[in-house]
Image 1 (spheres, rainbow over the protein chains, first blue to last red):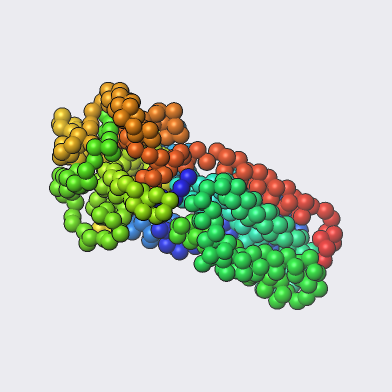
Image 2: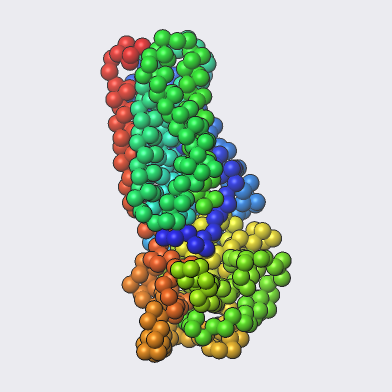
Length: 311
Length: 258
């Protein structure tokens, strides 16, 4: 498809920030849940910090979206309207004032944001009460964790699927953006937990080391998804789409893309991880690596969205 | 559902007078805008929140770069049978009427602008004054009172015709055959075929050349068809990441490489 006369939504950086925080929240929740299912005692710190981060990162989401839309009631329209129309799209479900549109990732994402916020609150409350000496409700945490894990994966990935369901030349043939955003959510979620744990100090080195190993794995998945995204877009052969891709990888966005997202955000943390620097060095080095991963996670989303909106 | 209404625009009859553009502005009470220099007689470059109808001017050049022919096309929302804007809309503000047209309920639209980027033709515009998305409605108020859209009424050459889709399709096919007989070998219909990805356009065109000549996509795609493939790839990514976490966190304490 040639870009011709296409228009852009011109979403501001606020939306990029929401996508970034949503990815961290989803990734941190998934990591905390899996760690909790494997060994809730050994990974107690990862579980606690992971659930806190998930709740704190998702909370600004509705606020950022509302600021962009202008009025709180406008965000509610994502979920409900007083008099819904009948013919509103493929497989749309309307129950009373509520509507669910499975082929509108923005609508489905709003529902998941609501559901995830609820389970993230419950999980954070549970670990908070336990930390304060309360009784651990293991079965409750497992149920909330498993439900939230599915929501978390969705929350991290759906912005990529949302972009892929636009007519923008850089996105319409990309297909891998959801997979990429999910991997970014996993790497930044892991980095956010490890960042806090390394700053706290005195943690179990084994747990932190395993978390960093997973984060490095997520970075490799991220790198693979990024390469597949570029390959899928370049394989279309359309002049307009090729121009849009060139804007990202060889044009005005190439410096932040290659230096910020790829080198600083993925390759440098991987080199430090596999070079053994993290294992041997002080927690400050781990914190620095995590900061790089977080920076790269934001830049990769920001720069892809900016390039896609500009061309 | 009532019979589908449609608009047939025959560019071979367009004289570029822009009566349609003016009539649209007047009937829909759209505010004037600052003129925009586009290098041709076209004004504006794109559809805007105050220009639902736009006469496009294209200069076809030969191999030496000399102007060979002028092309004029009165462009409008295509009211696609499978509409990207309608499918994208998270609020249900964009809906299909009983006549098959696509409208935006201004009371429900929340200004998310997803529809703007989901339209394969760049039709939907964002109105910064109201904070909502806007576009042509085929003059919804007029067609519900038995009147045709203002643009079609104003067209002095019958380049724009409005009526039932099935009847207009027959007229369009006859016109293509006539033009080809007269030597316009590249004359072709755009959007009349209902087998395309968008299920056919309820505003379809007779073009005198390839769609690319009029900056129209050769094969417009419904962006939402990507949702299933993109979601499956995301699920694959989730499985890989989840397995990675299982492997990383399993094993006895002290085996974490510390």
